[in-house]
Length: 110
Length: 322
Image (cartoon, rainbow over all chains, first blue to last red; front, side):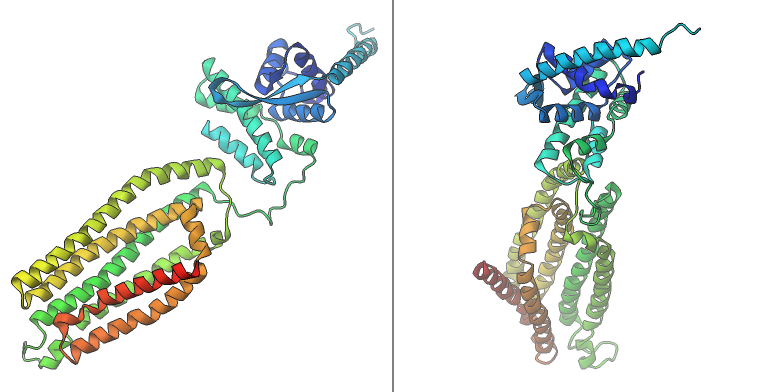
């Protein structure tokens, strides 16, 4: 299980990547994060929610209300054009980060 | 699910009540409900599911910081009611209702006893006692009962004093509110039944009196009054006991009845002041007309007449002041 400290910088990008696929709501996103990480990362409820708030404030996502099963009113989120741009930027940044960090943290101890 | 709701309510209890935060609470609750139901479907026990949902909740401060809220100071927040205090408040009110009901019943019974004793003991020579003494013999049980009743009222009042601090408002969590509403609903049926029985008894008491005084006549009419008072005692006891219980729910939920009551607090004080004058006056007239003028057979009528006039006055007063 990954610590939330390590993952802090990536939460927003992970959520955006999932919203790139289809508009979604809280529980569904949390579930997909857990499944795709093979149960290695569980995003806390409050972490998820504060990420939504932050992303919405920056116009990267948009929220709307929708009634679904059992008449429960859910807040759905969809990614905006600005959000897609931001995601691409973050994607490039991640490739670079990976490359750099890999130079230092490696298996071969000499 | 109840546990999850109260957990969430607890998290939000120290925060200001704004529409924005209410939306946050609502969204979080829906997410947690989704997760809880999914876990149950996957075969978790209820306790496991609740445990996981709460463990994966996180820290509310994260959201608060993001939204730019300050945690509200505890001093300007209304005092919260704990579950035990609510339970205690309802029990205490039920006990108070029984004690006040008992006290009022004792006073009415005392009056009934006075009439009864005057009918059979008053004005006669018994055990060599002069008639002047046997005349007031009925007063002794009345005063004893009156003393005990006043004792009960004072005791009940002091027991309920500990809840004074909640009179200026308090906060209920939505789980508590939900539970109370369920309780109130199930009590409403009991209350209605009790009121119907009480009113039924009062209605029944009137023909009893008519039968006694018209058909049998003479001293039986006084006996009829004794009977009437005894039936009224039972009815009054029912009204007070169940009324007090209803009041406990109303107070806790601040339903319309109580809100209206608080508005008319000022009116109640004036009506109360008039009551404090009128009723002792009625008792004095009752006692003088009985002891001095020996009008025991008819002077009890002062009570229903006073009751009617007073009821009319307070009704008129409320109507005019509105």
